Image 1: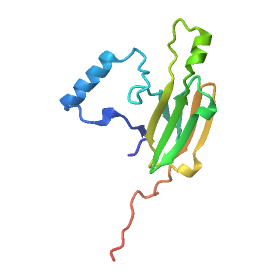
Image 2 (image 1 turned 90 degrees about the horizontal axis):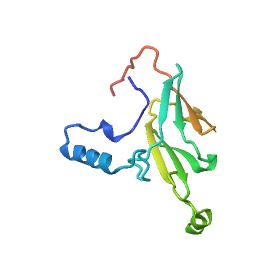
Image 3 (image 1 turned 135 degrees about the vertical axis):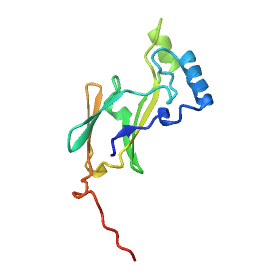
Length: 150
């Protein structure tokens, strides 16, 4: 049965030794929060709940303005992008940072929505949380379909 799910690199085979080495290297050299600006590492967190006739996708995007978030549907794939702009060097000199941890960059997540009625998707962004209601496609009542031979 279809379940809405995000695309990620974990769906690939665990027996690939090169993949395991790449994961170990990433884990060793990455910062503890995983925000390097590299889309493979920098992903915002999402929760997906089944609401019966729809799914509710909630994405944590604190600190983003609504204008910095874009939603796109291409070939039954929902693409959520959020981008924070970096400040110019002159502004950095003016503010005189001693230490800076807040991340800047582009963040992207992809979701398979092949079983979703894409024309009825509703979205709302408030208090740093993007909420997207994804209505399920109506299933065939009998679960079967007759095919005619030509």
